[in-house]
Amino acid sequence: MKGFSTSLYRFRDRLFRLYTHDYVKLTRRRQAKHVLKGLKSRMTPLTDEQKEEILKFWEPYRDVKKELKWFEFYNTNCEDKSKLKYYIPDTIYYCDIDTFFTDPRRCEALDDKNLYDLYFQDVKRSKSIIRKIDGELLDRDYQFITLEQALKLCIDTKQVVGKKAINSCGGHGVHFFDLTSSTGIEEFKAWLNQTDNVIIEEVLQQHETLNSIHDKSINTIRMMSMFLDGKIIILSSLLRMGAGGSRVDNGSSGGVFCGIDENGCLRETGHYTDGRSCTQHPQGTVFKGFKVVGFERCREIIEQIAGRMFTGTRLISWDFAIGVDGEPILIEANLTYGGLSTHLLSNGPLFGDMTPEILDRVYHGKK
Image (cartoon, rainbow, N blue to C red; front, side, top):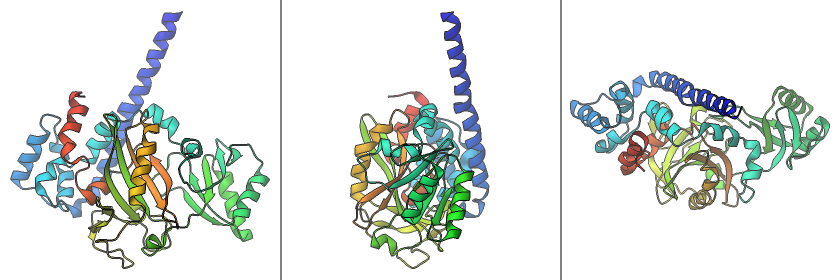
């Protein structure tokens, strides 16, 4: 009987691996190819020398002949052409590298915004009002409440934002509600009844300097961290800004983003997700030299809390708002599929000169 049970467990694990490593890779590869089709107008053809250099660099790891269009896309904005070979195509990153450093089974359990109040009790966050988990309503202390109690808590707050707690990306699933009118309350009730896993929070107020860029959205700092050999490394940092009156700052929702240098200042050039570049925000703020308040503190917080998630993933994209007092407010920890092109467009190769070392670990199993 014991041997039979062991066989069942092994069969279960094989099925799970088939899903997480094969089906997920296939899905991500298709998504990346779909994205690439929309970027054709932003591509700069590679010279013969560039092709040769890229293929020679990648030869020990894998064949990238079918991925050269990605290098053409990044070639348009790549300032140091000698580093072009270090750029990683989306298909390779999401299918090989992200899955190498991530345990999908553990991430699936960890990646739930309704659990942030447990994970990050010592980190400043937007105040949770109520939460809905698998259709059940709970207060911020995880005590079951009735619909009437939930509505009262939210109405007393007046302005709330509702977010999908799981499987959210690109600003989708974020809804703002003004509960000072009967119409707003009815809209909120209808939305709450139609959703199962959501968290409802206070609407944040951001620092005046970020508010000056675009006051309709909370403009957030995104940092990607990597846990490697017992150390937390910040790979890339950028500022995401809403535009055109949008309430969210995601590039996929029409926003713009700009890299942050090691001194906490914006770089000269920002970008849109389609690769278009700009030197100032559509509402007028010039990027170059703009000091991002709270940048260093964000780095300190990541070094403090990233280790809590390393059993699920060693690559995390963190989103922070900056409060009116200049202190970072943790918005989200993206454990999987945390975005790549925004980092590459903003700051160049994600792993920089570490790229050969990272690829050796992924493809050759080197520690």
